[in-house]
Each structure stands twice: as structure tokens, then as C-alpha cells.
Length: 210
Image: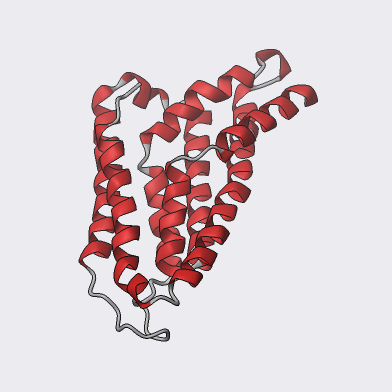
């Protein structure tokens, strides 16, 4: 296993990266705005689960395929982008809920949000490439087998992301609760969340491989 000093430095680096605004924060925010804090927290848990998938893949060396196969990268990137656009389009095309405090947009089951969030993260090849490029920098062949080290380092990245995404979910959920007191927000609710998801999908689709 890496030395304690190395783990502390790595943890601080991972926390700093996770605090910085990124696609995962925006995705969690869109879920909280659409359905409240609980949905955002479940989305954060789903993203973390999907992230662990990439940690496992990286540790087994399979992520090398994504790095050296442009076709595999392109297929996975477009699949993830299309899925985000699909989710966003569903929100944009959904009928507005009646304008009353007790009649908001139909809620999506939290289990469905969790599964969607897992899939969104699993279909993001940038996550695999990030782990492939970042984790080995802190692994030490002299400290033992690399696979367990990479698993530990990847788990640290995932764990430090959870409180950051949870904070975004809570703040966005509180903002949504305040806005829901204004009738106009019920008309904009789906549009805001859907636009964020479509924008994320478009960004992934147009992003460069490196």
C-alpha cells in the first residue's frame, strides 16, 4: 500500500478536484432542482456507484482499451451523451404540472434516478481516462501489487466526491423549495433541469478525446 503521506496528499488533491465545479455537480444540481434534495442525494450516490465501476475497470487494466482505441472511446462517449440528451429532452417535453403548491411535476422514483445516475457515470469515458491518467501517479510498485493500490486510490476519489455532490444537492434543493413558492417556477422547473442535462450531453459529445 502507498505510504500514509502519499495517501494524505492524494486525498487533498482528490478533494480539491471534486470541489471544483464540473459535470457531476451540474447533473446533481439538475436533479435537485427538478425533484428536491432527496433526488439530488440519490443522484450523487448513483454517480459514486458508477465511479466505482470505472475504478474497478482501471484497476484491472481494461481502461487501456479506451485510451488506445479511438473507436471504443467515440462509441462510449456518444452513448453517454445521447443518454443525457434523452433524459433532458424528456424533461423539456414533459407537460407542466398544475400551478398549485401541492401539485408539482410527477416525481420519478428514487430507484430510477439512482439507476440513471449510475448509467450516466458508467457511460462517461472521461472518467475512465481520468482514473487511468491520475491514479498511477500515486501508485508505488515497490509498495506491493498495483491493483489493490489503484482500487484504494480510486475509492478515495469517489468517497471525497460524495460530500461535494451532496452539498450541491442540499443547496440546490433548498433553492428549489424557495422558488417553488413562486408559481412561475413550476413552468420553468422542467425547462431548467432539462436544459442542464441536454447541455451536458452536448458538451460530452463535442469534447475532445484528450
